[in-house]
Length: 259
View (cartoon, rainbow, N blue to C red):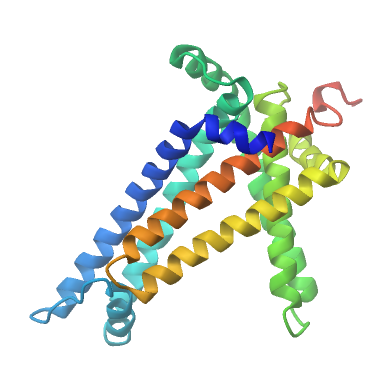
C-alpha cells in the first residue's frame, strides 16, 4: 500500500508519462490512418474501424501492411528509448519525494549514464535468456513455451528494475555487468518483491490488452477507453517501480567484489 500511496502523491509524473505515451501512439496512428486513407482512394475511411480497414487492405496492398508494422515497431522503439531516459528520474522522484527541478535534474544527469549502461546489459541478458528458453522448449507442445517466455520476460523486467534502483538510489556501478547479474540475484533474494512485480506486470499487460481490444471493437468510446486503459497501465508500472525501491541495495556491489 505504501507503493500505491507513493504513486498517488506523484500523480503529475503519472499524467506526464501517460501524455507522452499518447503522443507517441497518436503519431503512429496518424501515419497508419494516412496510409489507409490513401489506399482507399475514393472510398470512405470508416470511423473508429481503422484497424479493420488496415487489415483488409493489407491483403490487397502488402506494402501497406509492411508500412504499418514498421511504424508500430518504430513507435515502440521510441517509447523504449524515452522510458529508458525517464526511468531514473521517476525512481528519484518516487524515492525522494517532491524535489526542486534543478536538484532533480542534476541528480538525474549524474545517474543517467550508469542507468543506461545497466539497461543495455539487461537487454543483452534478456535476449540471451529468451533464446535459451525458446530453444529448450521449442519442441514442447501446448502453452508451455508461451507461459515460460512470459515468466522469464517478467523476471527480466523485475531484475532490470532492481538493478536500476541499485544504480540510481544506492550508487551501484551501472557500467559493470555484475550489476545486471545482481539484479537477478536480488529478485530471488526478495521473493515478495518478485511476486509483486510479476503480479503488477500481469495486471499492466491485462490493462494494455483490454485497451487494444476496445480499439479493435471500435465505437464512439473506443479511443477514450483505450486511453483510460493506458493510464491504468502507466500507474501500475509506476507502482511496480515503487515496489522495487523497497528491496534496498543490491546484495553485493560489483566495485566491492574481489577481483
